[in-house]
Length: 321
Image (tube, rainbow, N blue to C red):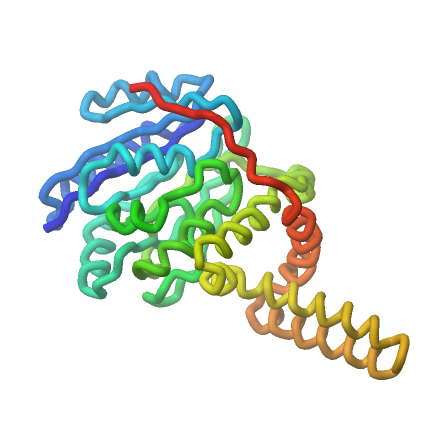
């Protein structure tokens, strides 16, 4: 038997947060492995009816963040984990509806494997402006129980080890999961299991807006900031393992520069070297069935290199209960 603190982060989740909380309550009440549990909602300055809906659930502890800078998912998770009291933390975004029976299954596997955390598949349900489901897709392609190669925001994790590893970095707007996970891997293992964790209710984003978002430089500054943090935190090898495809592309890029330099002395060697390095790298992406990532990782690389010269902004933030 274990105890569980559920930490739900919200920001303008009025259309979906009620489904999240009802499903969570049902799961915790029916979970035979739990001896006790609590629920904390950390809200990041919602401007809709999110807090009104959450306060309908009298047993929930509600926390409101106040920030003098931006708001981040990491900020909400950090505050929630520090306020929690129990052995494990279930982190959920406010638009996640847990799958019936998942909590018992996940906790049983986690304990059987003596792991320190666990995550699962998510089904994205995409809504239009009329709140109609227009598409669905599986978020992760998990085929077997294994060590999680990356983390999303919806996981169960050992609270004590999370705090010992340094918790989430509240000043990272992006790549905060990888930043935390690279440190956590020095303390324990998080599994991924091929079972549906829940439904993710989210807005449909058209391709034009996706491209605009992708080309925002600050989106990838988080990876560079997390990379620099991993050096200071002695978790660099873990960080490289998490982003193994990206850092293979970074290595190929550096080799390409070396071959370009060699072109001044031996043009034939330089050309064949450039071709071989990039063909091998692209071939690995093809084998992994993610060829588009070959091109996006090169774009991210240029943002990453620029981000190495960006300082991590810090500012004052606090919470109200």
